[in-house]
Image (tube, rainbow, N blue to C red; front, side, top):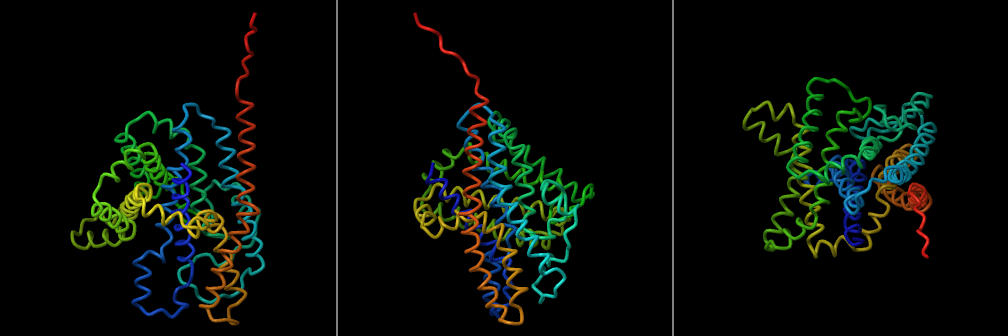
Length: 388
């Protein structure tokens, strides 16, 4: 089990690295067009796909304890999730708020399509929304990456009840439920019942991402069968599965665009995001199956740099964007943009490591202890019968 967790942590670390790279202004490096296009095709400029992998991995990992036991310890579970997600988030958002006010309304060189430039002053409603964390609010004001954590916490709060369904029903029914959730989300895209205040923060989008958690749960439920299936394939078939999965993960948008251009079917354009996200998630499923079943890939993912990256992945995700923006505000005009980007990347790793040591790891330990105490108090004490 520990090896499996290490592999998945390494995958999460690689996903966090892609998100970091996606926020670096690549034009700062004066890259040749061929090199830049190669980075685009390899996925280093699109962090959204990496977030889909986050959701799938969360569904997988969160399912494992529920699959090992029959009872539902909801309160201990919620305590652990709040300490795992919310406390590090709180430290990161306060960090970003303070920095945003220091550089409020200062001019900054153009940095691509970012919509996060620290132009919002701290107001009580905005601060309250960020502290409550669950609503449909302006997540781009201080630290744009938190949009995915809003969904993570929403889904986490209902996840034990989802697992009751996953454990009792077969995979065909679960996939049908996932597709229905995505269909409802797609209807909101068509009819605009609720608009996102931040980036993808509406509640209908949560339904779409809940479907991806369900796919992760199904993988966890059938992990032994999936691993056995992979082991019994020929080497060529294993390689084909890996490359096909990487292709789906990376090129779903491109393939869907080509399909629309060739056929002219409006369905492809109307539901572009929903269909492409499913392509990405299918790719994620294949990648995880390969990571779990391949001995060679396992040995790579268990290398120390990848394990370190996996350990700090959440802190890296939380802190890298405020660090990049701070470096841009402080150093623009003093250093070339490419040098600022390199400094920002190094600082992001350093601050992420410190945040893991000082905040994230202690918060997790505290959450586990408090959850254990709560679980112990919930247990019914039965006195032993006296023996004659």
